[in-house]
Structure formats: C-alpha cells, structure tokens
Image 1 (tube, protein in one colour):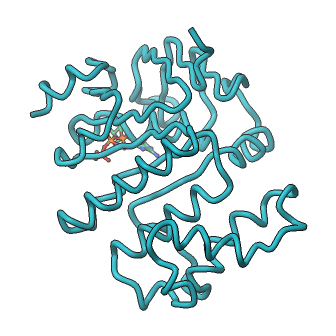
Image 2 (cartoon, rainbow, N blue to C red; image 1 turned 135 degrees about the vertical axis):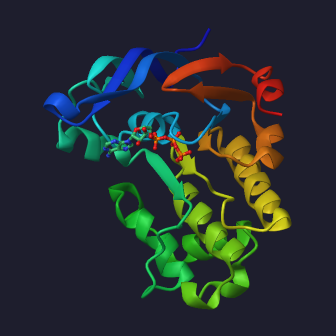
Length: 235
Ligand SMILES: Nc1ncnc2c1ncn2[C@@H]1O[C@H](COP(=O)(O)OP(=O)(O)OP(=O)(O)O)[C@@H](O)[C@H]1O
C-alpha cells in the first residue's frame, strides 16, 4: 500500500480558551491517498470546515497526529504552514478572486509564488489553463464581468495551474445553479485525474456526491462513516 498523502490519527480540536474552551473535533482518524477524491459531508456545525482547514494546513493541529505530505503538522509554526501551503490549491465558495485583476492575471498570480516557473511565459500558461476550463475567450475579463459559474472556473484554473498535490474545496457549488454546479465539479474531477491530485471537498450538495471516490460523513465533531456506503447515509 502506498503512503497516504494525508494521515490523521486521533485528532482532537478545540476553539476558545478557559471556560469557553469547546471541543469541536473528537478522535478523528483518516488516511487519504494520492489521486483520491474525498467528499466530506454532514450537518451544519458538525466540524467539516474545521477538519478541512486542518487537512489543508490552514491551521495548526493541537492534539493527536496530522501528517500532510510527510510533514507533521501538530504544533506547526506559521512559517512551516506557509511553506506547506504552496503545495495546496484552494477553491472556496466566494472564490476569492481579486476584483482588480483580470481572469488571466488572477490565474497567473498563483504561478508567481513558485520560483520554478519564473523563467516561463506565465501569461501563455495562464491562458492555456483558462482554455482548459473553457474560458480562453474570457481571459481579459474582470471577475465582475463573469457569471458565478465562470468565476468558479477561474478559481479552479488558479488552484490547479501550479499542479498542487492537494486541492481543497469548501462548498464549491453552493452559489451555482444545477448545471453550472455539475460542470464545475466534473471539471475538477477531470483535471484532478489528469494531474493525479487529491481533492478534498466539503459540501451539502447531494447532487455531486457521485464524483467522490470516497465519502466521509461527520456528525457532532466525529467521523461516523467513511466509504462509498456513506452515500446511503446522506441520501
Ligand atoms: N473560529 C471559531 N471559534 C469558535 N468556534 C468555532 C470557530 N469555528 C467554528 N466553530 C464551531 O465549531 C463547530 C464546527 O464548525 P464547522 O464550521 O467546522 O462546521 P461545519 O460542519 O463546517 O458547518 P457548516 O456546514 O455550517 O459550514 C461549530 O460548533 C462552530 O460553531
């Protein structure tokens, strides 16, 4: 068996201090392998986003063990997490595009973080990635001139252009109609399979569960079900 790309052992997580301290993750254990598409689902407040942000190196793990790309994240410093995050792509519901940059400039920006691309034609690379998500003809548009689905596709292009090993997506279809939501996740699935990258996706959208290789179901801060059979639990 290959080494997992993310390994979680008996992870606990707390918010707040002193009397206000509240445990939100309880004894979570989970191994995720390269190239897997994992969907995390469950009721509101069950801890999905908290777990996603831990798995994506957006916060430091407090208790238990969490290794991402062979690095232990428990007690990691801000600098360590910043370094790690260069290997991870992020796609969020509000897509976080820079409104004062064009689609091409938004996508290009994520290449500028990587020294290995600095001698290459970044504009051409950004345009070709936009073509891959069907937006070659919108490269010079600003986000305000794009539809919700188009903005989400720009966010996908931006997340995947540097070939990250892991992509995190939090509710990527929440603001989209049925067809655009479907298009967006199928595109993520296609690009991820081509690049052999791992996708971790949090969603309430039952319509997209079928793209997952595996579904993780959370309830009250615990992972209660893990596997394709979890689909039955949420349907
Ligand atoms: N920064 C924070 N400070 C204090 N409590 C928090 C913080 N973030 C989340 N929580 C609490 O942790 C619990 C888990 O929240 P989390 O956002 O991970 O759930 P979720 O499953 O993603 O919910 P949703 O589906 O509504 O986004 C909730 O009880 C929430 O109120």
